[in-house]
Amino acid sequence: MGFSIRRGVANLVRRGQRLGSQLSLRSGKARCSVCMTYFKSALVKTIPTCSHSYCKTCLQKTYTRAMNDPEGILPPRCCGQELTMAFAGDFLAGYIPKELEMADSAGHTDFRRRYLEILAERTSDPIYCAHCKSLGRQVFIPPEEINEEEDSAVCSTCFQGTCTLCKRSNPHTPTNPCPIDSDENKQEIRYQRLSGRAGWKCCEGCGMMVSRDVGCAHVVCRCGQDVWLAF
Image 1 (cartoon, rainbow, N blue to C red):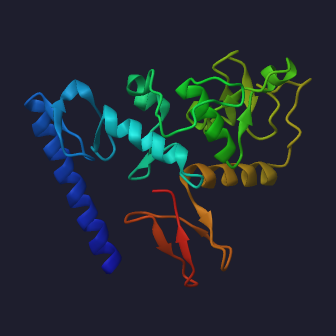
Image 2 (spheres, rainbow, N blue to C red; image 1 turned 60 degrees about the vertical axis):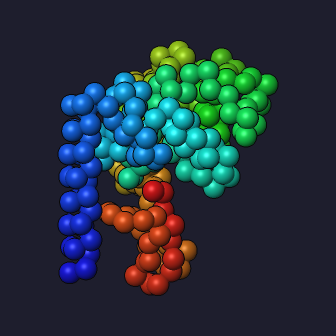
Image 3 (cartoon, one colour; image 1 turned 45 degrees about the vertical axis):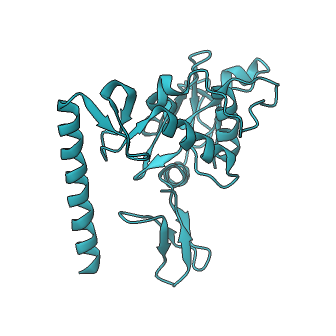
């Protein structure tokens, strides 16, 4: 009963937020959900799923905090929705935060390069382009550019595909078959990738996979163990 009430309240809050966003858009202005300041609608980014909005400064700070925190979740999330680089877009162009060590392993200070390097370090099952690897380059393919339903990741550098199951070149052919031929093994890899992408975690107490529907990032497993999930 308590869970149903919490879900109902969460749905009412979301409806109110959507209505508020619609009214603001009609007036040509939108309010940042973080700093609560009103801006011209073109100066905020609004998440379709939860209707929360971010001004340029608050979105930049959201990325900076997540990148600065060794245990921070990347990509940053809002109500479970990933704030991808495609979403952030021009708000991060030319952005070089003073509080973040910007230089990547190659000495570059481009924000996107640094972000992708940190993202690769924190991704549980990172995918690197198989074609670029054969040429002596290591190119990380971010999760937002991966089609999990087709087990395929396309590199934005060479536009070649990589299989997310075996990490070899994709699409597979008779001369380049996927070495993982067992459906059971394929499903296990897909499940592990899905759980990592969705922010699920295994309970350290009993090993059960824990997920979150509504509420905060703190979840208590059935065994009583505290679990912190991506928010």
